[in-house]
Length: 161
Image (cartoon, rainbow, N blue to C red; front, top):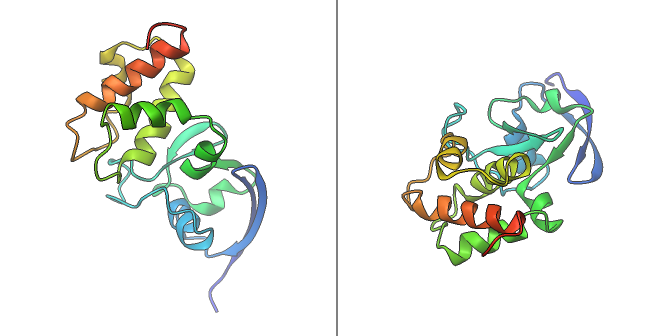
């Protein structure tokens, strides 16, 4: 029998406790133990952004963080921020601007965009590009993604749509 560690965290607003292998990374815990499959496993090296989640309000790469490191933390996944309506405007803009195609990168891209717009809704196109540069998209070419994020930033500032 392998050594297991008990962790307790707040996951998308609900308290969760589980006994897990301390070597399990956070994204695998979320996908396999919690059946929250919105965060994807891509490169497993922290460079593609597909596994992006929020821990204590900060975006992190779920493939680089062990689940035991989230013990006592508040963890939010794409399912949580989507269900709460927090990113509804971003989701609508991504659809409208065709900023998602296969959808593999979309959860991480949306969380990263929300992170930027919470801190800086007036971000320039260059700032948007820089902020999302750690999230790979192989389908869209990024132009539509930048357009969608820029549009939502304008809307949140009370500007034109």
